[in-house]
Length: 254
Image 1 (spheres, rainbow, N blue to C red):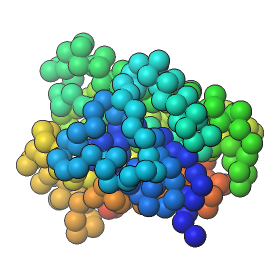
Image 2: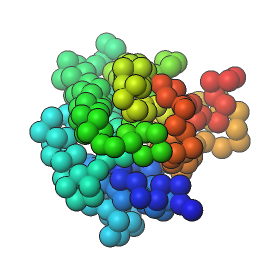
Image 3: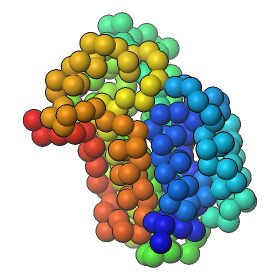
Image 4: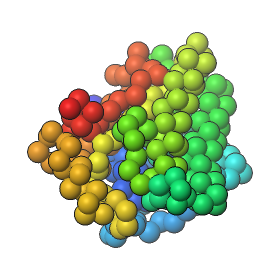
């Protein structure tokens, strides 16, 4: 039986990269998925995620930094599918600058999307999940995307690293505060994942550093993170809450 059969999920940042892989993997495991992003066009090219999934999904243009957008996203998802079982807060941006090169505008935009956007997603999801009857012990599950760079330093991207450290913290806080209401909350912290997105993620120097630091003989793929998300979203992971699952090919173990 599909691991997520009958489940309803929202994935933010679902048009590209890791979010795209999570959304398609959820659908393959039987979930109905609401795709949220500011555009349907994948940054790495190819067909829109909605075309890959088909009738089991809807797309809603969403700027997670705007509360009204997130509020409308959850409301539409529940109206369409009846409930919300899984909320994946994946949408994120980066500045690509170290501390002294980061402008106030860059800092505020990264925090607006990565941190305030996650706050919006968590708050709106918890509000909805509290109204629902439990299924297999849980009223709902939240998965926040952290990063190994929220645990160790983030080269040339101070704002991003700080925001990802915040993602790991807010996960623990929600898990503890809402455990008695049967809401599960975990985070996933990827290592270096090659998504094909242009810009800083494909910087040759950073890629070479990642290859040197990663014990496993390849860098990460979006599907590696999606596999972890499927597990945490499933009924097999109910007693796991407040955890930060590192998926990094052994980087942090070295």
